[in-house]
Image (tube, rainbow, N blue to C red; front, side, top):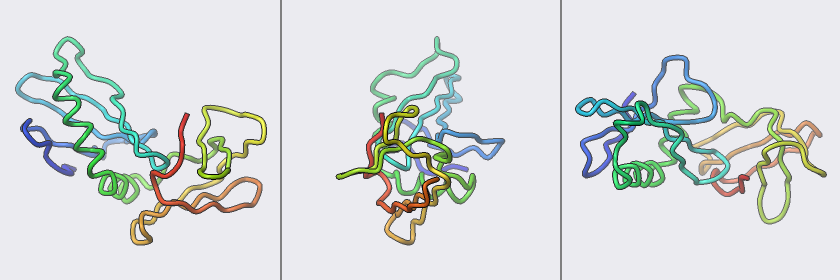
Length: 150
């Protein structure tokens, strides 16, 4: 499912629907010089990362990678909505977090005073809200992208 074109590259950002899996990510494929890259994104932060390129010896330039990342970052709301509607998860279940001020902090693993996420739900109609239900019974609501990730 093509989401949008990447300016000045002739490339498109796509959400593939063949057995997609966590973490949330998008694909960009170049058919002229055959390579495919995956870019990760989050419902907690606005960070966009390059996950991998295959084959690596045909990798695009750093400028092309930066343009793709900037395009995804500029349209994260659409990317999150497409992932949520087609894949149905924020990929946060059972992740450890610290719920603090000023923001929710997503952790790599257990830390002191951390709690696990039971479920997370994304609601684009509610201002891109992320509602997180924790295993300790609390609920935390925040705008997507306003958290911290380690």
